[in-house]
Amino acid sequence: MMTDVRTTLLAGALILATAGTAFAQTTYVRGNDGDPETLDQHKTSTVVEARILRDLYEGLVIDDASAKVAPGVAESWTLSDDGTVYTFNFRDDAKWSNGEPVTAEDFVYSLRRIMNPETGAKYANILYPILNAEAINKGEMQPDALGVKAVDDKTLEITLASPTPYFLELLTHQTALPVYPPAVEEFGAAFVSPQNIVSNGPYRLVSFTPNDKLVAEKSPTFHDADSVAIDRVEFLPIEERATCVRRFEAGEVHSCHDLPSEQIASLRERLGDQVHVVPYLGVYYYALNTTHPPLDNVNVRQALSMAIDREFLAEEIFAGTMLPAYALVPPGISNYVEEGPTLPYANDSMLDREDKAIELMTEAGFGPDNPIELEISYNNSENHRNAATAIADMWKPLGVNATFNARDLPAHYAMLRDEKTHDVARAGWIGDYSDPQNFLFLNISDNDGFNYGIYKSPEYDALMEKAAAEKDLAARAQILAEAEALFLRDLPQVPLLFYSSTALVSPKVRGWVDNVRHVHPTRFLSLSE
Image (tube, rainbow, N blue to C red; front, side, top):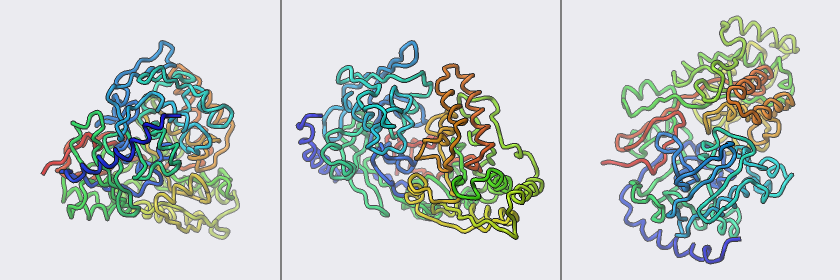
């Protein structure tokens, strides 16, 4: 338990910090894709939340302006010869927003908290490489058995179960961000509210009004505050991409993180290089609920996949900002085989694929005379709506009558993670690190938070466990490719498109660096007149 002294500084620090807001000179207005479902870094899962939390907190390491791993709270680190023990050396001037120093014990507390099953962290498994993490998260061991240790106030030791070549990249994810222990202990779930939150990043939370905006202001206690050029950032929850475009052109927002595909061509004509279209490490897919008949029939799932014209979706619905996807793992990813497995009909004509799909559906007992009723769920966006409408038309010759269920983004993903009441649901996955495991782990049987297809395959799980234990990267890549081939055979989730990131960025915004992760921390940006 931390001392009471740290907690008592909270109120005074907030008053002092608030007094400085009158002198704010620059305000950056960011169009975000929706409201955060949570600001608890241990319960977060979306890029909407990541953009905010990346401004409020600093982890051991961070994503720099180019989405490369850079020092954060840890100014340096070493790795043991066997690749299993990281020793992080903290900078002396790392502080919380109330002026208290950030300590190694804060990270021990935080990492134990995310693994504690009582926390209910849906994304805890991203940190399973830490020794005993999985067993703790499954309730088989106590949190104090986690492979983390404070050597002293400024030295943290993390022991891994086995060498993990991408571990530093894992630590850039928002789930590895620290919480302030006294605030969590005193306020419980309410530690994220503006009046209670204590953060250690370049910005501190000032206010959050759902459906309006979230406001953060520069933190005077941040160790690199002198280099933070923007004083205030406002995140506006704008789910309709076209609305963000209109507000951008009206000068009401400085950037939009996603664009309506049908407007890309005209936007390029009007706005030129303010339009950014960049390759992105992500996949757009449909989750098929394998517990809902007839989606429990693999032939039905394959037929639905065959009948989808991905080229049409890429070119006509998403205006060339996406690439057709016949695999789950995006091309160009690190630590993988040169050519990963793909769906066997990737190069077949649509006529041949539709004929084969109708044949599979007939064998399963379905067709226009005995149709299937399926509901397609998606989060509100014209792009997702247009894609769902097109796919419903493609499925009609198979005897599929599709209806639609549109929710706002938090409600849609809450349903997918917790309730899983969908038949077919739109989902997308953006790589948190450049490794195929970050896509293939979605389908592990006990990944309750992200296994939207409710896929249960002991064979698949065994391959993923084997890959996790393999130290040779080339051998590991082959095992992961076997797992992807098995996934494509069973197809609990249908890959449709590989992402490109799209954005509108005002010429007033300086320091925006296009990158495959679409990561743009406010601390590295500035505004000009």
